[in-house]
Structure formats: C-alpha cells, structure tokens
Length: 132
Image (cartoon, rainbow, N blue to C red; front, side, top):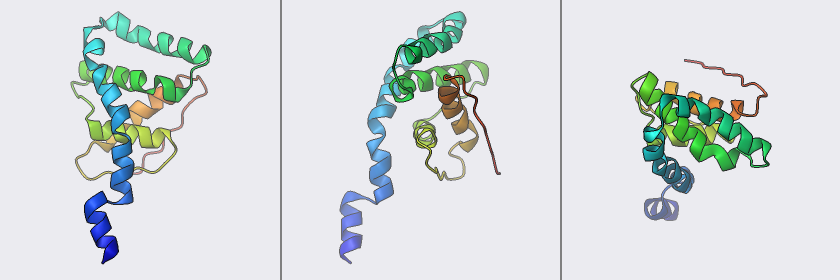
C-alpha cells in the first residue's frame, strides 16, 4: 500500500528517469529555430562542425543536443517527418546503451536515426539491429 501511495505521488522509477531527461529535450527544442534558419548547405555542414567539436575535446554528450536537433531538422526537410519529444527521449536512452520500450505509435522507427547520427560522428561506425 505504501508503495502504491509513493508511486502515485512521485511516479514510478521509470517516470522519474524519463523526467530527468526533460532538460536535455528542452535544450534540443530550443535549437529548433536555429536549425530551421539554416540553408540546406549549412545543415549539411553541421556534421563537420560537430566533428570538429569532438576533435577539440568535447564529448558526445556535449554535442548531443545540437546533433539531435540537426537530425530532427534533416528529417523534417527530407522525410517531412518531425521527431517528437518522446523520440528524443528514446534516442538519449539508446545513446546511453540502455533499453527503450516504446508503445505502438510512438515512432520507434525514427528513434535510432538520432542516436546513430550522434555516435557516427566519432567515425567508428555504428551497428543497427532492428527486430520488428
């Protein structure tokens, strides 16, 4: 009973974990107007810019918001599909090497592109396994 009350007040451990990612998702969302303002050539140039930051000593977590915002904008332009916040959360979770369970209709197919782009910036290659 106490556990149910605690869960009702504070949410499940999963709810709290997802909530802890809100700050990063807000950083990604804040970059959206900047990404929309880029020309196609400038958007393509984001990859070189992000790689230079990594070579300069920043880590993947440092460039994550800008990398995810870049993929979101590229997807909007090429596919006509915008990544939702829940998909950004999924990308962060996968980047951390954790398992992300998503409900039907939440866009699992779109999630791995975000995380793959980020990790491919290091030039080490990325493996994708999709069981559907």
